[in-house]
Length: 239
Image (tube, rainbow, N blue to C red; front, side, top):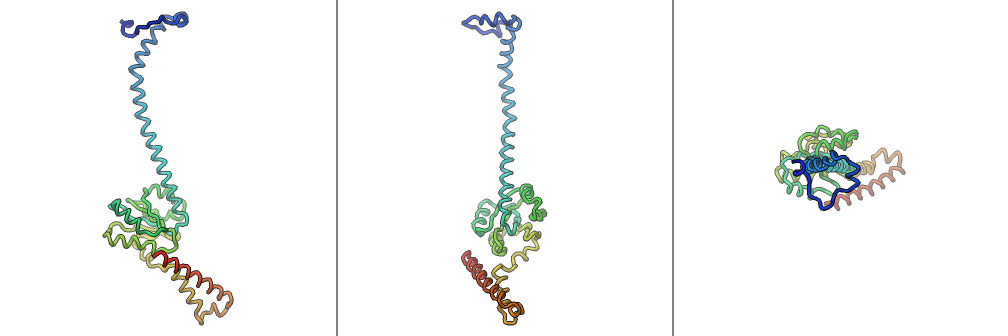
């Protein structure tokens, strides 16, 4: 019975070396094992292949996560303010429209809180920890001019009636600002205004600084005048 099930017709006789060196009992085994392997191997292979796919997916996922962390770190370079915006409910189109109205010096990124925290951990930006809840879009301001960087989102928020999509918090100069503290950031004077005010003080005839250190003060006034003019020109070019 075994011979008729498992032996296959062959035009050539078995190799003499094989029949001479192997016992008969062993010769029967390959046919049985080959039959078993025909039925069992595809199942094992399919099973193994099924388990390999999640590994590839997780590797791709891990790479994407690492890239996101690196992107966050890159945007923190020369960053003056980082803020979280409640992103839940915003449509893709609204998000695209928002990106268009932001200044070139401001970058908006959607990333998971866990990945953002991984990027800011151990840095002054870690003060943003209270924002690490819900869905956030992250605003990176690469300019010293904070109010003009925040204003476009405020205008967008009012225009689209996105009351629930408020700022969740921000960090500026190492300090955390909650949603209720944003007025301080939005009303702070620009650099041009600060230097213009200082220039006015130095130019005043009653200025004790000009009176006591005349030559250095004159140089400072000249420098400030040039700097204020430069800032005003830059501000005018951006509008």
